[in-house]
Image 1: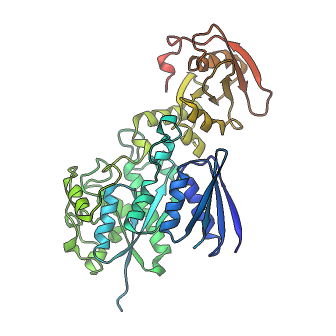
Image 2: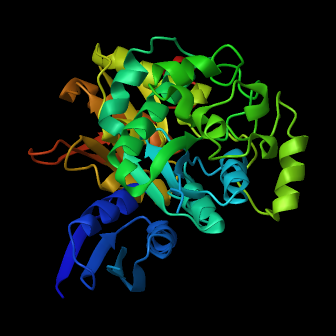
Amino acid sequence: MSEFELDARRMLCPMPVIKTQNKVKELQTGDILKVICTDPGALSDIPAWARINGHEFVGHEEQDDELIITVRVG
Amino acid sequence: MAKQHKAVALISGGLDSMLAVRVLQEQGIEVEGINFYTGFCVEGHTHAIRNHDKDKKKRNNALWAAEQLGIKLHIVDVIEEYKDVLLNPKHGYGANMNPCLDCKIFMVSKAVQWVKENHKDGFDFIITGEVIGQRPMSQRKQTMPIVAHESGADDILLRPLCAKNLPATKPELEGWVDREKLYDFSGRNRKPQMALAKEFGFTDYASPAGGCCFLTDKNYSDKLVDLWKGRGSREYEMDDIMLLKVGRHLRPKPDYKLIVARDAGESKFLEGYRKQLPSIQVISHNGPLTLVDGTFGSDDYQTAAGIVARYGQGRDSDEVEATVTIPGQDVVTIKVKPLTSEQVLEDWHV
């Protein structure tokens, strides 16, 4: 299991979702992906995307104006 | 055991595509969704940049619809490929810069490609929520066969909500789908869709037949045409089309335009572009961050900063101090008299 980071700062949804989706295709089951976003909509969309596509939304942290959304690849 | 045929559905996030999927699910057909992001898609998050929209519910309707339907959703970035659809629409534009028929053909052709790539997993056909007569350009009796033909989908394109008004498609002829259980909706009347939504228990859905594309919006289309005219070229990048959705746009000279933030939320969003584009900020008073797009020289500073000052708290002052920042150069501080509302000419507003 490895941990990866994805920079989706300044992108407006659905771009952070698309970037997450494309990155996850390269990863293995159980890998952790941390997506750094500035669009608050990503906090609704990335978990929704994870739920419907068989991945796990682990949680999120807020740091200054950034959101760090963690997904475990299913 | 008989082969299980699967469908891919074009999901906009509106009611019709939700209904089309559920109609097939009722027949035991497995469906996955596909959604194309052109860059011009209307999404709540773009509006959520503004302060007064901060508390609005933020959701991507396509993702939300997929979750309600219990289907997977593939979101595909088609920004680059879509340029050719927008710039060279074979079937022309609608009321604004919306190339609706070419857009539908393009999206169905991308779905055809997806079905080919995923045929090994059982995907054999495409469904859409189209209804004859629903839309003036892409959903007319005359144009629906054009979509099927020019996309390359032909008889693997099924429109469950109006299938009974159209020739039978392969999924119906082969018995994968029971045509009798499909529908014969037509026209702009939304009552049949509302009734079916009620039957399926859909209570919360995006505005029926809601416009999902900025290109159908006159103000947005006007800004896009102005951008092209200002540059003398119809090329555009993703950042250009995002910036058309933000701020107040004024063009005091053909060579450049100003993008003036309308509130703190937009100022914060525009901050992200300060390393790419010249910017103006009043520093003696509170005021909006403004980006400059185009050819902008020191001769323009007074007029441009005077306009920017007009939209800040120093608008009634005799003089304000402002900075002009050109990426890669030293910041220039100037003193300027704010323009009056009469001096900001109506023609400058894009």
